[in-house]
Image (cartoon, rainbow, N blue to C red; front, side):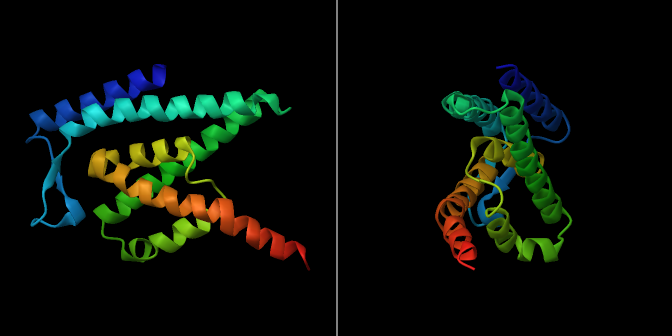
Length: 172
């Protein structure tokens, strides 16, 4: 669980840096001043716990799939690629929000739906990468809530709609 320690050290380093440079940021729900704000201090509790939980799920899934004959490095490589996809999507989404890049933000739902045909967005490694990618901009709470919605959409798309389309495509 070295990664849990690394995430814990990084989030508390970030929080201490924020604390000594103007105060720890709070983020308003839906970016509306009328709604309550959530402090980044909650990320110090959420991220290490969430990292431990999600990595435990990845390890459990890999152990269950160990009975399937494949290269162990192949399974780990797949986990890393899915994690990186979540991380990149989180960073791009956070940067688009920070710099008000409307073409990406206006189409993010469509991008997620298309992406969910190729990548299981509900996998724990994708969720962890996405949350870590957005943490600098939004803290840990808001990306966690957002990815739960994305994971739900991704689960339905990858598990039900994708096989249906693949089956229809094979009829030709």
